[in-house]
Amino acid sequence: MASAGDGVGGGGGGGGGGEQLTVLGAWGSPFLVRVRLALNLKGLSYEYVEVDLAGGKSDLLLAANPVHGKIPVLLHAGKPVCESMLIVEYLDEAFPSAAMILPAADDPYARAVARFWAAYVDDELLSGWMGIYDGGKTGEEKAAALAQTRAALDALEGALGGERIGDGEGGWWFGGDRVGLVDVALGGFVPAILASEPTTGVRIVDASRTPLLAAWVERFCALDEAKAAMPPLERLIAAGKKRYADLHAAATE
Image 1 (tube, rainbow, N blue to C red):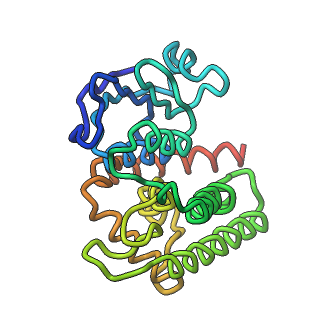
Image 2: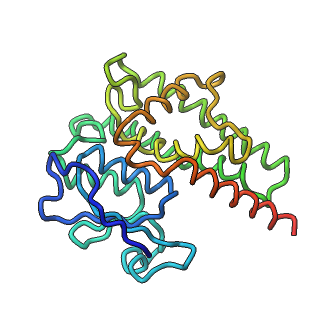
Image 3: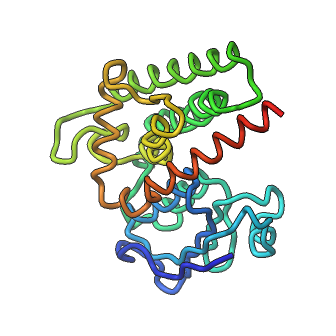
């Protein structure tokens, strides 16, 4: 495990203030991107600790997440919080004076809608997407996975069209005129979306099919907070090509 101990974020708006924030993660994880993005949006300073998952699960990771032993984990004053979207909501509750990611607490319906679509990203989009790259699946199964992925993207395109409320300075987001919970949930996968075609030949977001989502990806990539949260694209592509080749080699043995 290597430590990258540089603080990230401005520490404004109710930042750390003596309550140390530490994130355990792996550089290419889309779930790590979500957490770093949320911290950046809220202007919270934190220490990042890289966990080398290839070398086995470290004692620190197992102590912080003994149930699943997965990253990312947020340590707030030494107390662990696990699961990326739970961490995002926790940060809103623990630091309410910083920029909020969830809709206002006095609008429970808007919160429910945001949580629905944030869960949809993992339940429908991610589950289909993973099937496309599974070297053990048949061609028919991969075609079904691609169809599920495209259906999920079509649904998100519709949600984005329904949620946008204006053409403000910052553009349109799932959260309306600001980056919100669904933007963070889907935003974690933007690096993988960008790397997909050069890695596997599969274009995940196609402007001819989902123009609003394609424009959303461009706006997301232009955010300073997103730039600081995302891994280097070339490194991600190189790692993805190797993993994709290894999966298919294992499937043919």
